[in-house]
Image (cartoon, rainbow, N blue to C red; front, side, top):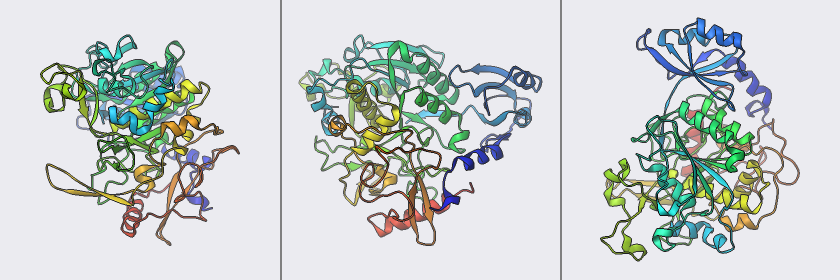
Length: 525
């Protein structure tokens, strides 16, 4: 095994030490005296003496978190940020970055319809939707939005319309459509934590505060799943990213965190053909990161293709293999938030009531949307179904089971054409595009194997001598004997751990693309 390139525990610790006392590269001083809101990551929960030193250095504490104690929010003059970064115990300082939002056929495609016929609806499981809010008045969510809280400061109403759609993919009962547009887990309880405003934008601090609240309310509402259909660019290694550290705290608390991969798969600005575009916190190795498939209007998986906009791995800087899994995310019919920004700007996306037996002129409570934001809640619903059947499953066991049982049958490549521009996009079905495969709920419910220990996503290592990519496990993880990542478990026959078998794509052109991608993304550990 090529030890120098592996993500060993000692290497991470050494990197953290080297990282200490620094300010993120995206922070710019425009006016030294102008206050700026920053996230400060400490090596450990700060002592009173450290907080006093922060105050004497011009920083004013704005927010702290009970369950994410190593991160705090301060306001400080821009010119003093570099000085507070040098205070002993401070690991990293970043701006309070902006974060953005990223079912009839869908449920049948992934096997949820059959699961519901056998009584699996996610009953008793709480799912926290951290998004733009949820319209609890929609008849498909009647009496199942059990808690709402606003972290934006303008009320609990879903003024953007994204969160209601996401919640519907998870939990819609189909009451307003005669059962046609039913969510993946229509028996779950929804906890709505609003972090995105009427434009679909928010801040890291609000998301962290919402995650902190979800952990706080875990026992009260049996919150076992968090859905994050949002993200932002990656600026630093995952272990220095406050957003990644927050989702890991939820993971440690026993909550499965499902994150949208991002919608930048068409981005070729760095000549990467969309590789390396996974957003944060989807780049965290522990969370379950989801890419989007196109269901092609049929319940069969056989004709489905990857959505060309679905972000691809490996993750920037750390090179984790992402996404972990893919699920339907294109032209998804779910719940509408009347009068919201999306509702006003895209009236053509309102679902015609005639498609579910209504009058064409009648009011429609349904809306169609695309994106990995829509794929993530499909997987969140699947996790809830698993938890209803097996309440003692850990987040790592859920992740391993969904990945292992995912369908591995894909074409070698596919071509998508943008109907507006006529531009074509070629997709190759490699692990950085489809992860461990296509969500299969039926297979997951029928599987009884239990993963042992932590199941972080693996690390991709490029070998310039052979122009190939190997996938290795982090040294710090104890994998256990019951189940291990490998060709017979999660990834299928085209992938294996270690240097002895190198992963290769099914297309020489794709191999060259991936090799160039990993080379240009490489960083000194």
